[in-house]
Image 1: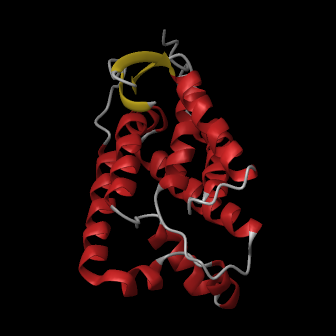
Image 2: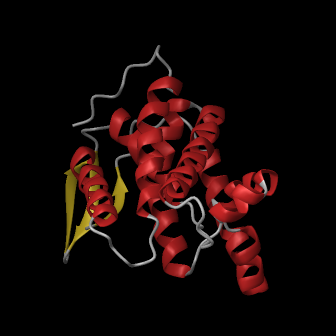
Length: 212
């Protein structure tokens, strides 16, 4: 079940931050391709490095958010950001959305570190921050129709179903001991942070859109 689009008819602004984040992710990915494993090992987030050097660890918390392990990783993440980021940005405003995105990414890294604070394995990717975006979309647009590719069919489904299934899969994978190299706890942490932050940052003077 792959999301491929949603209804943007209620969007009022150009999602410049979403677009810039996508561009930034691709630029850093191209830098990775040019510099190889040395770049990845240096700038990914390693809990053990954070414990030994908090200053450099904080730097890698941010750099790791813009790094990816391969083409499928970045294309999947950017597809989700493209679909869900614009409407959340429209509701929060550009500045608040950027803050929201970065805070969700920070929370995701700390959630992953919490399960193994001495790990020497680096984590990287925008998935944790984007998980927060999904949570924001779920709160702001629960009934919005999202087009998903289901087998050979394109099916419109409510956001609460699409995102709800995604989150359940993250929890199942984390606590079922999935050994596929995916930082599921980062996804869970970013999602929970998004649920909390969107309620704090959203404009209280605007009604949540009653999408059908």
